[in-house]
Length: 392
Image (cartoon, one colour):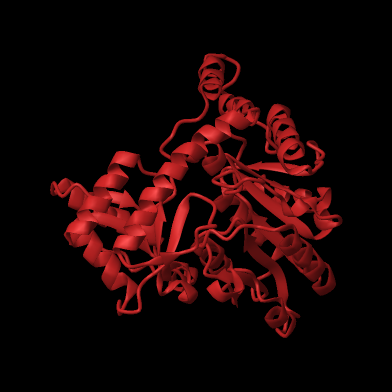
């Protein structure tokens, strides 16, 4: 008779040895435990918008959820209304013309897109260029899939822009993809037409595919731009976009990628073997959200501006310095020279002030002297966080 609770001697896949549990997955469990103990932690960690989507978006979702014929499987390529919505959105705000039938692929969030693109383009053992600092998922998913990660530096002295001279001197013979993310997370550095032009030129000369992750261009940013606005970019670039940040829909898991028809078809080969289309009512609601006027985006940004001021006061209280020109939904600041270690600072703030702030080292070694504050927190809570930090 089998013994109860017997541990089977089964080893996990070797690929798990190359990654650890996502930092926020682990840390938010600790924060949840502190809250369960009555410690009332104010979280300024993740970028999960706390404002709602537009009222019309919610109405569209609710109305279509009642459709008895709308609950079946949906097309792998997304419904036409959503693809056309994304195409119209790109034309209106970025000045980029996309064929909704062949050059757009809806995604269940950008993380899914990172997985699908890597599977579609990179063989095990080939290389991908990943920014340091940068979104940790570029690194973790590349490692899980057997790609070799090669970091390229982003530094404050260079305005957190790639050092193209250093890139030119690297051995790029095995590089297939280069991940870029502008407006940048975590640093808040904004995109420029000149940056995108240099990236497209670099990609074409080096036979590399640039994948630009562009979810923050509507947050505290006067002029959204897309890498696909550069002539010839569609030949060598893929761009991600997301409704999580721009339309306050992080839990909906709706994003997209755009590129040339051949690249999109390769990615669809992968995606169609992994998942099915999203709930039809959600796709129709997302298409409605994409019709938002400028005043809706401005309403969001008015809130973010107020929060940005409070986050700046927190930075000053901690002795941190930051660039006033940052865009996006975070504030990135450099810790004072008197502070030995960033995690020592963030742990002190967490356990003594009961405020969770993200240490920059999770984004790479170039973030080791920085902290990141999320603006996805109500003004009153940010003000309370400021007062708590002042007391310690």
